[in-house]
Amino acid sequence: MAPGLVGLSLSYALVLTFAQVFFTQWYSSLCNYIISVERIKQFMNIPPEPPAIVEDKRPPFSWPSEGKIELQDLKIRYRQNAPLVLKGITCTFREGARVGVVGRTGSGKTTLISALFRLVEPESGKILIDGLDICYIGLKDLRMKLSIIPQEPTLFRGSVRTNLDPSGLYSDDEIWKGLEKCQLKATISSLPNLLDSSGKYNSKSLSDEGENWSAGQRQLFCLGRVLLKRNRILVLDEATTSIDSATDAILQTIIREEFSGCTVITVAHRVPTVTDSDMVMVLSFGELVEYDEPSKLMETDSLFSKLVAEYWSSCRKN
Image (cartoon, rainbow, N blue to C red; front, side):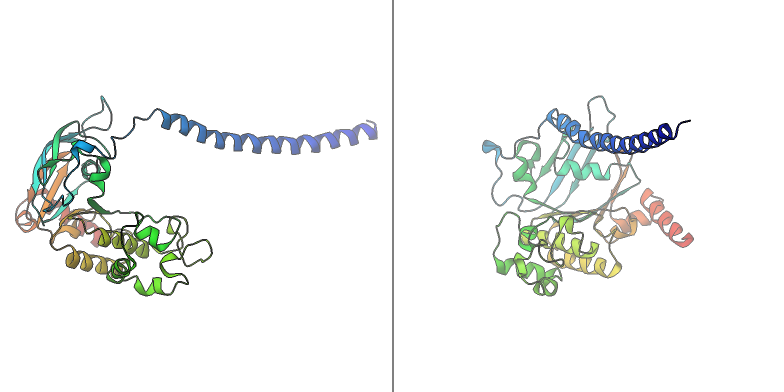
């Protein structure tokens, strides 16, 4: 074989190798970016949510004044022709009560909370808050009157002020009082711009989703938002799952002191967290199995007592 032909072959082989790598990377990037187009196309076909405000159905400014919640034959499915997730739940959360919602995975706990915030609309039945059917009022009027501390705390890029008071409704004094109650005043006081500190120039401030803060601190931020709003209904979606025991104790103490007269609904993935509640709701496959005081349920051969026994049994094994 001629030496020139060998050199030409090697030169072309190297060029083709680099070209193949380049086009492979380019094609992979194109496939990733085209997903954004597919999502936009999908979102264009999603039915819109109900209106934020319904002018002729606006609740009174003081609503809810008591915090009483009534579920009347509540049935929910996520899609048409899909099976029911909640199958006709009827019960009443009296005003000012601490209610624990427990059940195995897939029992409908999260669906019940989603229905309360109207993230999913009921198939049939009613949810009444202080006698007012929430399905007829605007979403903004409803959600502004409910408070939630989620299982996964969320912060937004921006200042401390915008994270605690995104609507700009409260004064600096009110915000500082809320920070003091949720044990964050000393931390925020050490920031250079205090309430206006942002993560753009300071690594100790709030970056995207609060990634530079611990899970416990993010959870306390969510508690600070709730303390500012002072709503009559508070939902805890197992807010202490991802935090340490010390922060858990702080959280529970503040909730007992500051929300003593409010209706508190706790969705429990760890069953013992609701043993001190006034009432316990036990769900199973979308049906209400038990609804009574935890002490009475523990004295009988109830599903709640079995769940508690299973939990402690698994803890001993671990």
